[in-house]
Image (cartoon, rainbow, N blue to C red; front, top):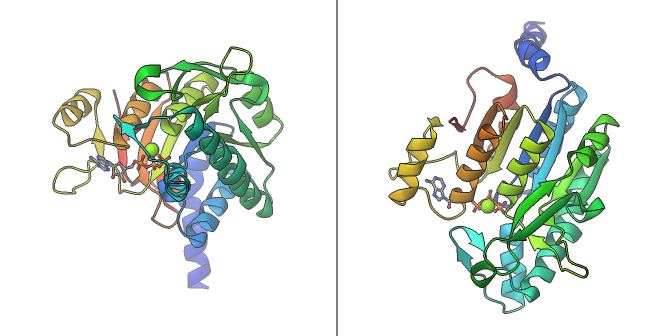
Length: 283
Ligand SMILES: Nc1ncnc2c1ncn2[C@@H]1O[C@H](COP(=O)(O)OP(=O)(O)OP(=O)(O)O)[C@@H](O)[C@H]1O
Ligand SMILES: [Mg+2]
């Protein structure tokens, strides 16, 4: 009996958060680095389903950096990164699209649907809802920078109770363009601000943003981030992630968090408890 009362108390503790987030859109960036064990993937699906069933409107944007690198290695193609973003030749772009849209997107969609959700997998090429241009073709090739997101595509899906699962690939505007590879963090933040999301959460493979002694920053402001980028504390894949957080909050998203996708149910801990986890980014 006592145990049952504890369960009820736990549910009641979540009540203010459930009320606050009801009918709100929350973008979850599911990092390739957090898509590790089958058990963690199952828990991720359960967390998204729970959010959905209590009336939150989750939108998933996924990455897949590690799988792309593994496939390129298997094909003897070198992976190159500049400032945390992949250099995408035409040859690499084909692999990026196969892995992101073909493999990872469908895996996440199947996982959510087998848990009883109505997930739909799309990339920016669908309905050309995300268009992009070159970041700097000479430097990054087909790695792109988003120009426009047609929010109505996502808003319609969400309105019809679908969970959009988005692969970070954008359409190019010219006829026959192979498309652009978009850093998934930056795709998530652009989509979040375009659809008026209340919150954006980045699931990755660290506790959050760490200092040089591996201690967690529980919150960071824009000026603190600038300094940490300048002295190299924030580097590699964390650079586009903090930039994406800033872009989201500057674009009207109330809260941006970077949390540990390797911790069981970290998504629910962040959403439904007052402690919060990871690093919160503010202006
Ligand atoms: N100050 C920092 N604190 C924490 N991690 C950092 C820091 N600076 C750099 N990193 C690196 O950033 C990585 C997370 O970014 P990464 O791009 O690898 O993962 P992801 O974005 O979750 O996955 P994907 O790119 O596949 O979507 C960490 O694993 C870590 O190596
Ligand atoms: Mg990344």
